[in-house]
Length: 265
Ligand code: SAH
Image (tube, rainbow, N blue to C red; front, top):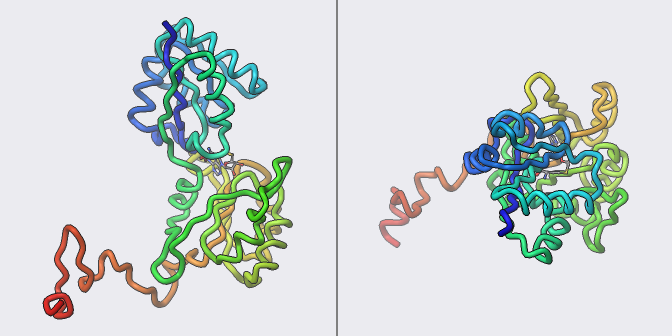
């Protein structure tokens, strides 16, 4: 009888941001494979005594899969801890398919993605009524090419919020693409490095024109999220359009509207 492999989202770094379900699985795991220093603490904090722990940072995908299968044959619960949420840039399918082939059951526990953690760290809303109601989670092409139609320039043409993973070393390309898509030189750009990491989190605010220099000055070269959004900095704007959800004139399931408009409707 094989055990079950759980792909658990460990969140962006702060161990308190692991879900309760994720923590409970770690606490009863027979074996844990964790992805480098980013989630090491979460693994070590709640892992039971005698649990097999392994850092995957020097393992190829085939080795990871082989390790998970081997451990699942010995333990009831095996946890693969991943940064942020496992469904984003986490090779989930590549790991899960061989488990299917080996008839090993698996499940996923979602995690707090670094995109959400970065917005939270900076106190920003990624959506704002009448400004943008769409968030695009993407990256620029590195060694992984972008599928046709998903070039940053094409996505940026929507002028919606962009959360860019895995792209901090490619800031010149980000600048080029946004400019080509019509974003102004003074469009606000946010970069958050190591969001939620105690003592290490850095929040850099700049514009499309100067964000690269600001990041260079702060030596930001890895583990950073880039957020470009027309909603950034809205808390300092003199006026914002009110969110309909809290507008007294807008009734919804839990509250009746209070205007004459609805009474006559
Ligand atoms: N599954 C992860 C993303 C893995 S890809 C998630 O949902 O967050 C790795 C990229 O995520 C990094 O290049 C960086 O862009 C981003 N990232 C991961 N942790 C981060 C953190 N604590 N702060 C800022 N960006 C982070």
